[in-house]
Length: 222
Image (cartoon, rainbow, N blue to C red; front, side):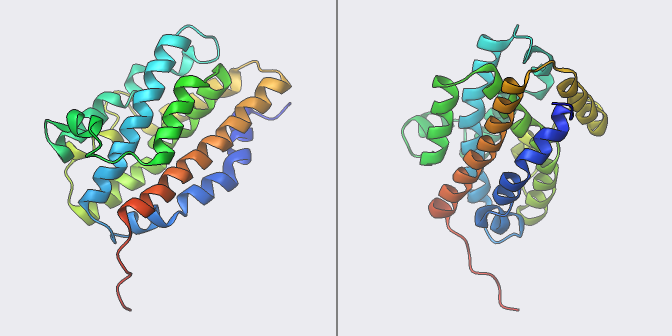
């Protein structure tokens, strides 16, 4: 393939990306129709997914030529999510999560299991791209709107903060350049693209389950 991998990824995931972004849960959340508990519930799902992805990435792919250039400690979200979980649920959040008092929706459990049990280098690169580049892009919009609508301080939104990466645009540009520098054959490129589109669908499944679990308030009358 002659097209750059970053361009192929954007093109091949555009439909799945748009579908995930237009989910009722995210629409209600970002338009201020939910509440702080919904933000906390989303945080719990993110903690479960990243709590699966980052240990696998470090232990299995830290020296892999495909992944090593992307596994920047400054991008890791688990510690930030642990701080957010403590903010939303208190110091006993781990026990609450383990005991089921903090809900992990079925799609989140399935996603975390997939990461732990069916990973590959192509799978991990695709999910790293979808999740982390999304956190550096649309995640910043989520941070701003959630803070505006629900009054949550940054102490409860550490997930969206990246103090160690410098200027965000430059970092994202560098990430895409590293993608484009990878020497992948057609089969491996196709696998990365397929896994990336699937990752967006998995994310959409989580939003759908959250919609059922959390529910949405009726839109205010015009």
